Amino acid sequence: MITKEAVLDALRTVQEPELGDDLVSLDMIRDVEIDGDKVRFTLVLTTSFCPLGMEFQERCQEAVRRLPEVRNVTITVSDSETMDET
Image (cartoon, rainbow, N blue to C red; front, side, top):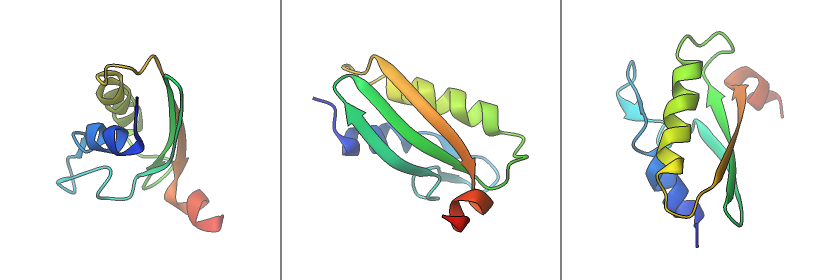
């Protein structure tokens, strides 16, 4: 069974190179949801123009897909300005 903690542990392997920490520790991963073999979460970028946005998405996708039971990963991308408004 896939757990939220397993997903977060997988995402802790994705580093933000400029800040030198992982995306989970930097609070860039939010709203993790698991439905059977499907995982959904929000990737919160520091700005909507983040040059590493696509790379982060790809690396997050790869990290979560390494979990044995995961068949589908859906990532919603937002930015901190938009998330702060909600």
